[in-house]
Structure formats: C-alpha cells, structure tokens
Image (tube, rainbow, N blue to C red; front, top):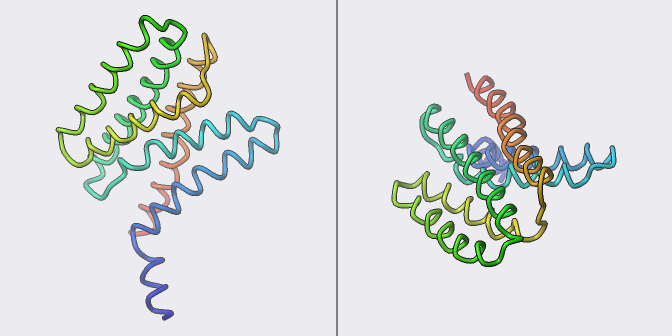
Length: 162
C-alpha cells in the first residue's frame, strides 16, 4: 500500500496537479487576506484556464503552448467583455469566435487542449463581465500572473529532478 502511494506521489500527474493547485490557491488566500479577493480569484482562473495545455513534451513545446494559451484566453476574455454591451455586434461575433476557437483543435493534441481552455474561458467570462479599463486590467492579470506563478513552480520542479 505504501509503495502504491509513493509511486503515485512521485508521478508527473501528481506534480502537475500540485502545481496548478498551489498556483490557484495561494493567490486567492494571500489576496483575500489583503482584501482583494476578486484579483486573487482572477489569477486562479488564469492558472486553471491554461493548465490543460501543460502536457508532457519537450520544454520548448510546453513553453510555447502555455504562452499561446495565455494569449488566447486573455484575448478571448477581453473580446467578449468589449463586445457584450452591443447585442447586434455581440451575437454574430460570439458565433465566429466560438467557431475559430473550436477550429484550433485541428492542429493536434496540445492545440485541442488550448481550444478547450479558450472555449471554457468564453463560457466562464459571462459570470463576471467588465467594461472599459477594468476589462483590460483583468485580461492582463489572466496573462501576466498565469505565466509568472506556475512557471516558478515549474522551474523548481525541473531543477529538483536533475
């Protein structure tokens, strides 16, 4: 029994799940302590959205996939927030955006997961719509903090396996 638990905790799946859990929980807890729960939750969503593209492959492909997923998730969220106040523009735009995000999946397994993240981002962005500079601020938080916090843990896990 102990060997099975040890084997599971030493696997890459457990390490990846630990990275996304820490990257999602730590910002919420710390920023909630300072009274900025919304920003912490936005950072957690950014980590959650780009986690699916972090599949085993070369380090170069991982980095490119995470950066592309971060750009797409941030851009899609920003576009939905900007187009939502104009219904005549929004509904055709939403259909085109859904189609384009779905078509990303024809480029392979990692692209399928990036497409999933983009579609998930579109659907969850309706939960809290922002306007103006606040929309830009939240898109920037999605992108910047998603790339900063979990990649610190990724570098740590890379150096501990050497």
